[in-house]
Image (tube, rainbow over all chains, first blue to last red; front, top):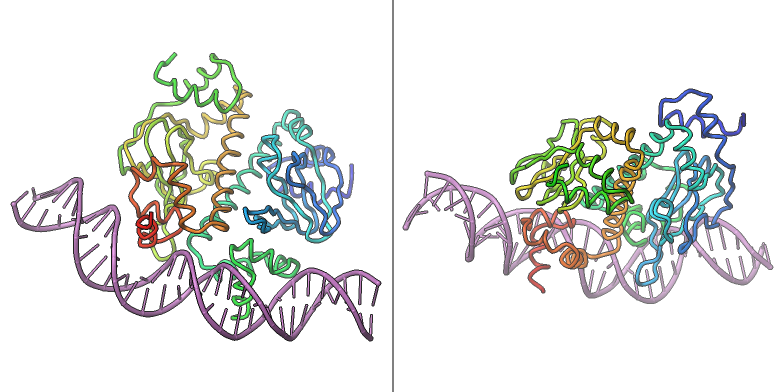
Amino acid sequence: MDKKKKALINFIKQIIPINGTEAEEIANTFHFTKIKKDNLFLKENEISDDYFYLEKGLMRVFLYDLDGNEITMDIFTENNIVFEITSFFNRVKSESNIQALTDCIGYRISYEELNKLFHDKPAFRDFGRAILVKEFIASKKRNYAMINQTAEQRYQHLLTSRPEILKHVPLKFIASYLGVTDSTLSRIRKKK
Amino acid sequence: MDKKKKALINFIKQIIPINGTEAEEIANTFHFTKIKKDNLFLKENEISDDYFYLEKGLMRVFLYDLDGNEITMDIFTENNIVFEITSFFNRVKSESNIQALTDCIGYRISYEELNKLFHDKPAFRDFGRAILVKEFIASKKRNYAMINQTAEQRYQHLLTSRPEILKHVPLKFIASYLGVTDSTLSRIRKKK
DNA sequence: GTTTCTACTTGACAAAAGGCAAGAAAAGAA
DNA sequence: TTCTTTTCTTGCCTTTTGTCAAGTAGAAAC
């Protein structure tokens, strides 16, 4: 038993009903991982092999648009699973990068290990599905916000729902995540 | 063996590698369903119990914003799985409605039947996951388009990638799906 | 046929957001 | 500390999109 995996064990228990022993066995398949600030956890054109529980820190997903501009598509905060769904599950080259915005620690498993867990621990299948569903719902909410809210409303929502992002992430990344330019976000922020 | 389920069988085979017999057995768990134009396949505040393969027709997902306006969040075309992920998988009341935009036919199963299939046909688990991943990717692409493209670019893309929508769906639904007002879409369309 | 909807268009003006460039402020490096 | 780089702000002007309201076109109802 690895005492240090407590956060991961609690996270698993929070997602699915499972007894302590089994949650521990699952957690013990995961490997401790550190990522230094600014380092890339996933590079574009690589096939992602990381299903990663982020215990501490912040990460972002970004890619380049047709003009070569960086677009921040997602920002992950602690106590979440971080992975590039397309590349990881479809075993194709990633179009996006995942970068640590602060020093990060957490636990990872490979595609093979994940599938072995699905096989060995049927309860864990529900975990896998629940994570997919959870992230999918978050993506749909973002779509809704982009259609129905102004940039200012999206900013206010981020401010109240995930204030830790505002504290640690440069404005330009937040701006592109919210779908505006950094000038616009700077003006929005000034208003308040 | 039900000859009429050929489209569904082919769809399953297209998503996962599977032999004909097993694909047929899976397909035979599904129930033929018709939905008349304009009818609601799912009503808000109901718990969705439909995992639906749409063989022919068009459907849309919509909900009401805070001002009571209808927002079309998604449009489904034929040869796709239609379901409200949050309500169906989390067994909670749906916040959105699903409506037939034309007369529709297809095959449905319930949540219970789906889970039974996952249990009885391990290969079908990959199908379930592949569908989730497929829809998730589509949602992420929509997010990207909303952040990086103008309404006109989004319209042009829809025009070339899914022209059947333009033919059969009223402009106001397409407009809200693209994240613009119907006036704006009308002007965009005029340009070309 | 006429009426009644609904779908769509269009004009005039307002609001939201972007582009660009200059400069201030803050954070890091030496 | 000073220098350098990055981050953020701001002004000016343009583009995009929204709002509201009036009007047309077409389909469906009577």
